[in-house]
Length: 190
Image 1: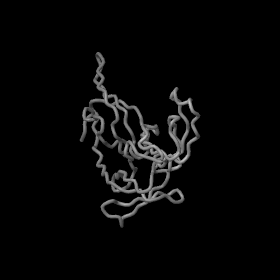
Image 2: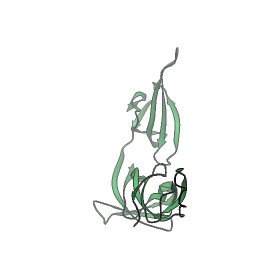
Image 3: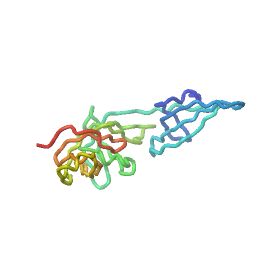
């Protein structure tokens, strides 16, 4: 059992039957009152982040989460197919609702992390930074790159992101998959 003081960032525990991960933890002690743990926690099934305070008398069960490295193969009719890296004959599917917004950055043959809770796959986790090829980019006009503006470009997965004006079709760019923001250009198109 975990006490409220064990709820450090990264700790995974069960609350109301669902696994939650602690994102932020602050210990708050006000005059004449009991100390309180202020937290921001993320539901690992729905992905929803909430703020919640915990009292010293509360205890929690630690969630047993299994992380496995898997490879994304393809998607077909709102189903996403993955295979285990250690045993490629083991394939499994996830629905589009389970994956949510991370589908924008799922690239064929990319290695990702699968999250399993109580024998059920609850979510997937992408690397924080991934590289993508730009397949569509409006042309930049000579001289308009000095101010450091942005334009909308389309990457190989079909997602659109804001990128600097100097990014061109064919460039390889690195993107933060958690925020969806452009990070850097890795390779210039030839």
